[in-house]
Length: 84
Image (cartoon, rainbow, N blue to C red; front, top):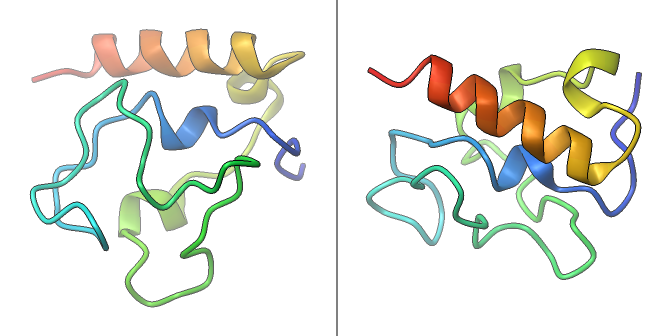
């Protein structure tokens, strides 16, 4: 499965607990990543600076749902359930 164009849910919902370009303290859950373009594309995709978390996150029917709001809701729920 490939990412849905103009979604970006995986760059908004989850927290990232390590520095990434433009976000030296990581990214809190629910905050849009500064590396997400206005048309919801990752600006550091394929770059070595891209966090391991992002590299390991693969789109799936469950995660992506039928549309971006469903994807965001699923990822927000997952973030809440896995919060330390």
